[in-house]
Picture (tube, rainbow, N blue to C red):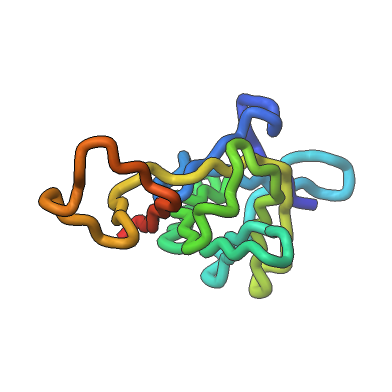
Length: 148
């Protein structure tokens, strides 16, 4: 059996799109609930977020390292990206899944995802300063938001 190891409650896990999240730790337990060492470093660990049908997240850059005593598998430098920031509401609730096929395990736990910081905003339609008139009222104004 494999479990997520954390000094906090899983309700506190909040990740922001575009930021790397802190190291995660996975522990292995035997059938008697005693901590057991990993027999090998899984080289195919996947980290993904389970999202709603119309929302897409990508988790990339995850690196794994086995502790010196082989009791803890650490996942580091994982970053969440999404091209659908406008669909992510503050504190979007989802499930983070960490799995491997070579060392068969799967661990999942609830977490929250927040939209990333705004890096670029573009006004549509483009309006030049010389087109603005005193007292002019916009009927419709849209912003295109991107993290690129």
